[in-house]
Image (cartoon, rainbow, N blue to C red; front, side, top):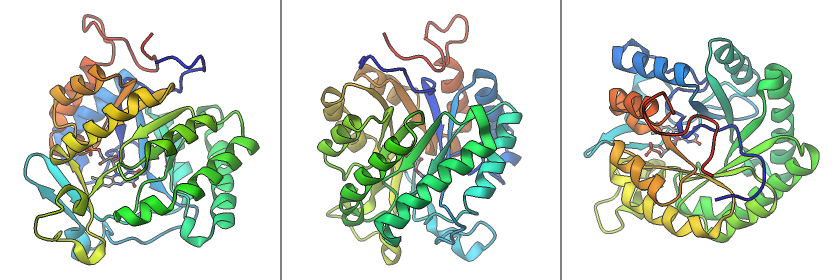
Length: 318
Ligand SMILES: Cc1cc2nc3c(=O)[nH]c(=O)nc-3n(C[C@H](O)[C@H](O)[C@H](O)COP(=O)(O)O)c2cc1C
């Protein structure tokens, strides 16, 4: 796909969320040798890392790493899957920006992911997003070329669908105030394709499709989600692949620009399948946590290292 615009600074394989809010690894995964090897592969190949979402101010979600009683909000599912209702626990943009700066110093190519809190009202959410962009720029300087906007986080399908108008208004405001900044919009399987097309018309540099799939959408006839009390949670990894793939296959011809496909990659086969239907880049999250060794292989194999026959990081298909 070629829209004639400059390609966003995104490698063919990118890591999404799985390296944490700073983008250089999550404790206690960093104790695992295979995860550390993945971090090394990411650094050495220059693979793009999208952080876990930050909000403008510190926020306490369902999952709090220091509190074992909240660990039940993140579970494993069979078939290399995960179910999570993490809920955006984070220390706010100032801390995130300082940590991301440190990650760049250590050789990680990190793009911050920001969650505009539309629940606070549209004007506040837009003002906070603009502030966040200014804080990232101050901290990262020339490394701040792109910002990923998480328009897809709540686990309930209804909440996601309702944010369409607000997300478009937020994108428009950012494009007007900060036209140099490349925006990457992360969307949900619950969003209509027209939403992605409109984001493209507003000038986003890339669409990232899709975030976790709401549990009830994936298993409409099954027993309720074990996390029903907190909205049901979002499914990622293997069990989510076929639905995410079908969405991306239908979305691809409707867009002209850069499309990062993700959700459900459980091994190299799914990466190939996404490239086969026209992905400009493919993102990994759950795989990096459940099978870091396979994730590292994928990062190296598709990064354009000599002899692999693949084009390298930051480039798009011709
Ligand atoms: C525990 C967990 C936490 C996540 N947190 C975020 C987040 O803060 N922001 C975001 O945009 N995506 C978040 N995601 C979604 C992932 O980045 C990814 O889009 C999703 O898991 C689908 O990809 P996968 O099947 O490769 O895991 C999270 C996923 C998991 C499993």
